[in-house]
Image (tube, rainbow, N blue to C red):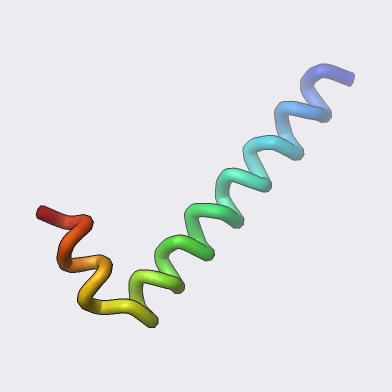
Length: 36
């Protein structure tokens, strides 16, 4: 059961990362400030 929760957590983290990347594409100025 613990491994199942871990898989769900990893999936959530991946979706969060993808959302963050999509947001950076929408906000070029923001992503530039984050890079430096």
